[in-house]
Image (cartoon, rainbow, N blue to C red; front, side, top):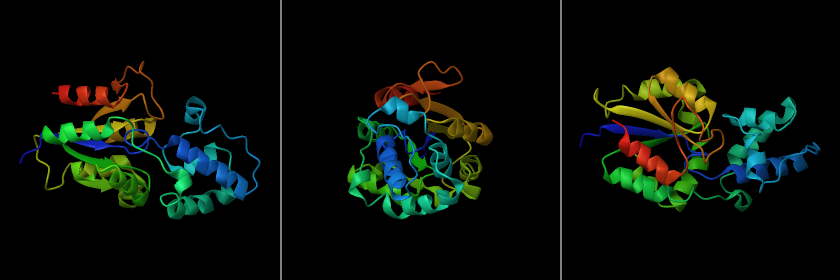
Length: 219
């Protein structure tokens, strides 16, 4: 089957509603390392968004953690985040339906994320959506930990053809920069961590149903 539209989704803030879970993790690390940081309330979504950065190292630093503990916290995140019930989260409402509909319409869909693969696959399995995705690329799979480089490589992969339309769906400036670097179309989401509906550089989805409409309408 020839797929004409190929969608590469960022995970956190696009498919996974994981921001509050990440802030809870930072609160736990604040207590563990006795840092005394003034972190946002996990239930205050707008305040939490102000701490977000593309990579986990940057996310930890932006929250105020000292450089000497950043790597150790990231290692704890890698080993514990996916299996600790305190950090359990769901996909955004209507994401499952959106992925299913686009799959049925012939879209080739996958994930390209700076998060660790096991932090991604666990919620995908729990929500029954992995069958709609052809590939899942986590941090371990990125070329030089760079989404743009990885996207450029994937465009040449054997299961794509020259007439495919490549689209990256993301919620941060880092995602947009990766799309520009790889010369693929970009669609932002306003329900995630970084963009709002007033963005003018590219189309922005206000919710997953709107995202489906935008992607179906792309020529």
